[in-house]
Length: 155
Image (cartoon, rainbow, N blue to C red):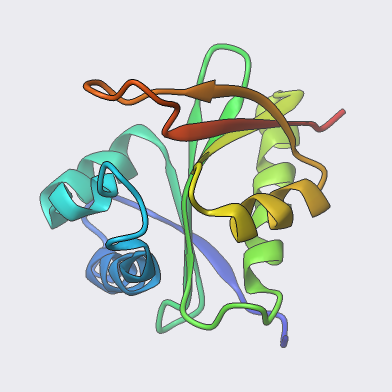
């Protein structure tokens, strides 16, 4: 993978629409695999603008070829909406390395993320990156765990 440039989007950035398209395309493969459906199904460009206001919304490339959101929580930096146009090319790993760099800059010792229980191939990737399962969570209205919470120590 060539070294792609990252940049943080602001709520009014025109590239948000491109980022939204990348996320929808990347998450489309989950349709019918995960239950309940991804929150991306109910997301709008306006709600994505709010995300860019509340969290660090990073994109790779111009045009956009990857996304990740980093949301400060009390003791962790939460990684969300990791999406790439071309999987298995190293861009996802580079975005996760960016998340680690941002955690250090922001003074966090831990990164945290969630993955749906059905996505076992994704769990293997996160484990290979040093993340450890710390809990299983259940969406409202479900009796079984629907997501796995992963955490990684940064410093």
